[in-house]
Length: 231
Ligand code: SF4
Image 1: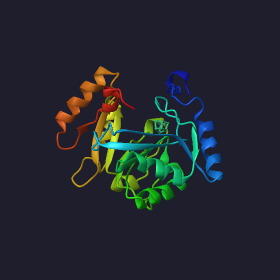
Image 2: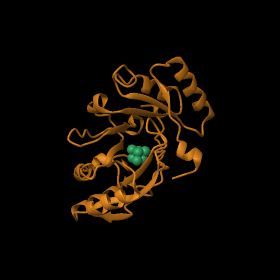
Image 3: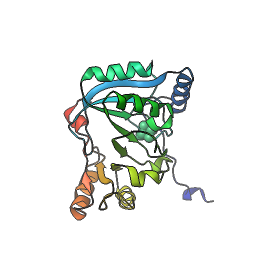
Image 4: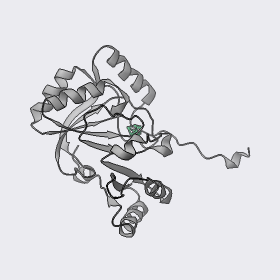
């Protein structure tokens, strides 16, 4: 192959110094019977349909990918029992919990945590890259942000069971990928959000234009927590 035909490799510039090691550390914690968390914090959901609702975020450590643009540090910061998670979450007084990461669907044990949180009267959102179907988990709101351009593969289960898809848009190829989703934004299907890379004014214009062009299919999602400078 001629060298000039090779696509340049994406350079990892994410917030986790060594993503593979972070995931190995997380698995080691699970083997000790504890949950590997990066953090638990209370804020408002900043993106998608639930924007503006008070939410306790449980950030699970480790991920199946190492996206070049990842802005999350998913190293293990806490090793904690399920009882401790449930008690801490309930202490905030919000009825909504968002399991995020890293990639929370990576581990079977998080399904047990879902049961425990549900049994405590809480409602559950999960934010996932959509690689691992979890039909047995008791989830009330599934947000999928596919990462095909970073090596992720979307499991078809999510096409029928997601509440919303969210595509981060930088250019027209991202937009084409979002519009190629066969169910999102169609009648009865998951909602379809475009989330422009806010650092790229062209992406903002592209998304606004696309939503105007497909008014019944697309919605704009902004990272309102970043605009408000809250966690
Ligand atoms: S899937 Fe999400 S958390 Fe994992 S590396 Fe990619 S952007 Fe980061």
